[in-house]
Length: 212
Image (tube, rainbow, N blue to C red; front, side, top):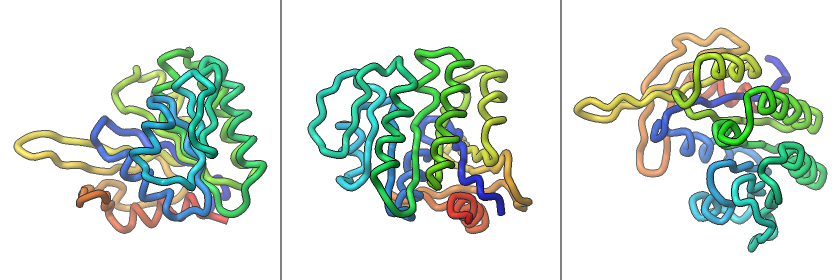
């Protein structure tokens, strides 16, 4: 198994991205969550967790009401986001998961070239610190060239799909992987506040993020 412990999760709104992130973060001692689409205050209410570190790259103000909230003073400064990630990584120990939710939020304010450069630097920094990382992308929010460029940066890409007919059904597909996974497609169930993926796909995701 590769020692590269990074993953891109792409999905439509309502497909289950946040629930999957919540499920994954339970498996780690530390979680650093970079938010680009909502404030740290709003996110912490959703997560209902005081232990995780939140880097707010959305609010654009230094006002913080929680000791583990780090607010990026200028969300247009991508280097500052990476500096905040490094700042937290330097002071924690144990298995760590870095979440960036989402790349789509960054692309609202920056061109693809700048975002690709930022993501590359972030992945290198996380790898150097021995942490795992999951980045998210809103599926269908970008043109094919943008999606292809971003998918190419990750060794594992997982897509969450949502189909609305008479009833809503959700599916997961492994688009890119570091090992053979068969079948690479399956149905997803959401029960209360939990998301249930096919066992072999969930096992693969955990092998990637926990590989040594």
